[in-house]
Image 1 (tube, rainbow, N blue to C red):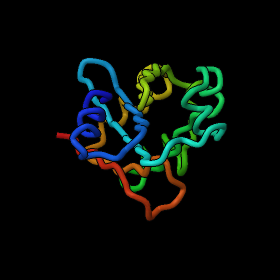
Image 2 (cartoon, rainbow, N blue to C red):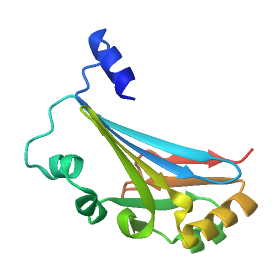
Image 3 (cartoon, helix red, strand yellow):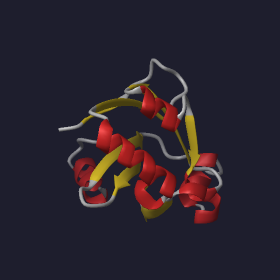
Image 4 (spheres, rainbow, N blue to C red):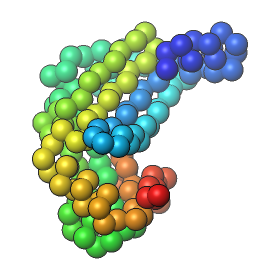
Length: 150
């Protein structure tokens, strides 16, 4: 990621100064990933919460990094299993690794590191053929991430 950003900047194709990436990984027999990228063209303000999150330690991130999601479309059994709106404080529920460079922070989250998420994943991959999840937003009109099996 860092090499691609530096190359694009040197060629004048990107003005992005910092990239924050979240890689939600399901490890197992088959590997699945959902990767979300966030970029800024302006420098991160010194002493802002984002600055401390990027430059802080894991203990600081563990207390603050949350994923908010909602099952928008899918079988009722998935909606019942996950709930209407689900907020997960990642540092307390799941295992993750941070990779920090001069112009990026990548967080790789192992979704299958929790017994609860493993049960939900077995339900999803065993019975669900299509599900639409609203990630990181409280509003229903925001962009959605869709997954279709097969």
